[in-house]
Amino acid sequence: MNKKCFLLALIPFCLLGQEKEPSRSLWDYHPIHVGGNILHIGQAEVDHTSEGGHLLFNKNNLFLNMLLPISEKSFFFPKVEWNAFTLNWNKNPKFKNTHFYYLQFGLMFYTSAIENWRWILRSDYSVDLKHFSHPGTYGLFSGIIWGTTKINEKWNYHVGATGYLGMRGHTIYPVIGFDYSPDTHWQFRTIFPFDYAIQYKLDKNWCFALKGRPLKERFRAGIKEIQPKSIFNYTSIGLEGNIQYEIEMRFIAEIYTGYNFGGNFYIKDQSGHNALYTTIKGAPYGGAKLDYAF
Image (cartoon, rainbow, N blue to C red; front, top):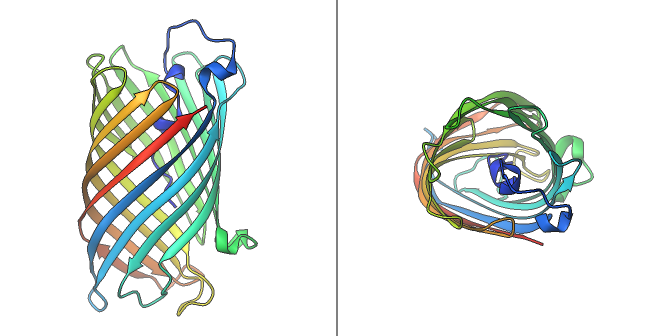
């Protein structure tokens, strides 16, 4: 399940250093957001000595999230997502199902109450819709703690950690990086492991960027498969041209296209052993996002 990677888009620009007198009405911030994402990666060759073949990956989701203020500098963002993805390896020897669905429940806390810092703490729980009554087997927890501090007027430093637990696996990665804004139009970001961008903001509405897009899905196949309850993991990264149109705090439309450089795909048995590892080669990809606020 992709965890990744779009947290910056969840934070309204009104929270990131706006100098205006804060509104006293929650509805002035349009706190309820609805929207969706689509992503499609073209057919990619699978490099494996015995099976080979091609792998197709795409993903769609719908989301609802809210802004719940605690104070003028601290906020909660509860969120629920419906996700559907297709992972179709035409020579898959372990399972035949290609369409998967899950619900993801998230809660993010944002605060700028600590001087010279902005902090994000987020936790997510995802569960397979077809096996909702077996969360221990078909559930996945993930989380992030992410702090940003200003070095000077042009440089920000990022630090933290992110990871997941579930489906017979666990991992923790550091969050580390920087962003540099030489003027009001340009920004350069390198934040491992999820945000890489060269961005040009034309005006208050239009933004153009060259971005890296890491992708990761961890899931479990069904019971009635050749290898029941197989655990599989898909990881890749792409480079894209990205265009975004925004009406501040009300609407975001984003389209992008680029090339996915491939990555890794493995399948393990239900206990997380006897892995079959493959390498996925490159393919073009594209996608879009809509976010509307009430």
